[in-house]
Length: 184
Image 1 (tube, rainbow, N blue to C red):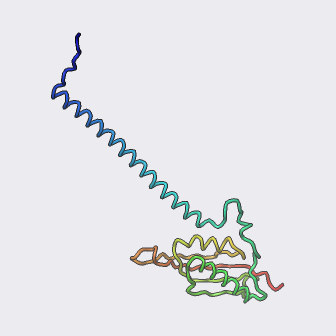
Image 2: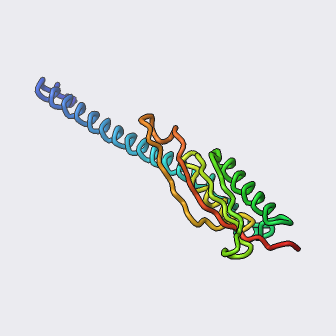
Image 3: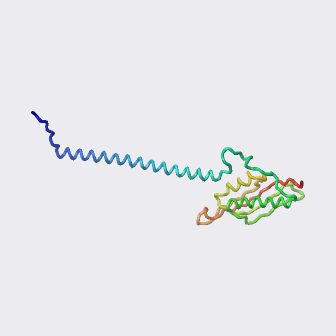
């Protein structure tokens, strides 16, 4: 009976096997770390894109499937039995749009039509302050809502503070015109 014996490995063979095992484990750890880093990078990208989508959806004035004409319900002309009341309605419309944007009206002047101007057009010049991030929503509110308003002039002054523009209000000077139908 012959028994086959496995010869004990030499010390050099054991060191070589241990080094090969250590390199294999180190390689697998590097692959795993690279995979985890890739997953974390994708998660950060998804978070940034989700945040951007949330901000864009918050600015959207309508829900999907509705058109602007359905949203802008109401009379396209300024209300009021007199031209002065139409001017007050214009002032109220602009003031409420500024308030919805989180701003304040600093000063305003209603310009009623004179002898040489177009009949039925009422203009308003207003100076206001609001957060810069709300400026686009404010302008959309004015132009897409009812009554129809037209922005004739817009001057925007960025904040001049060292604390950052996100905390200081943006100054806005605008001239808006609306049409009054006249006494019914």
